[in-house]
Length: 174
Image 1 (cartoon, rainbow, N blue to C red):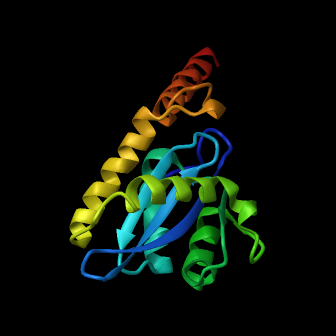
Image 2: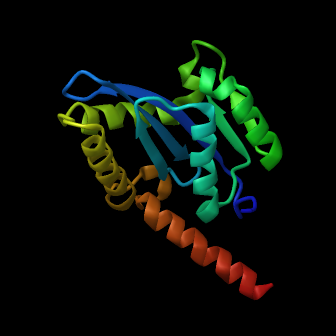
């Protein structure tokens, strides 16, 4: 089982609804690391249960470790028993924002606005599979080619790479 991450951080996440050309509704589960600004996953499907959300967090943990905290709204897939048990078993704190206070989850709100403007509103999704492909390409572009002022004008991938180099230097010096 993965361990806690080597640096303290939290993830923010939120669902974003949209629809494919046929009118079928899709949802995206957007997970962003507060510290690195990296979009760790965008899960796309017609529904996303608490069990499914927990499985996505476990997949992320295999390469990144578990976060200290996950900041989220009060959606049913989050407040249910699946996420509560998942968090308890992995010693991850679930922090629910106050209802009607999206500014308490500000970074993910900003990310979702950018995601909606640049990806969802700019593309016609003909199928769920096509939506997954286009959205994953956008996520990879976001992480690899978009510098952030808060990261010293580095992309999230550059920032993570620099962290890993710094961590390995600290470990070898110890």
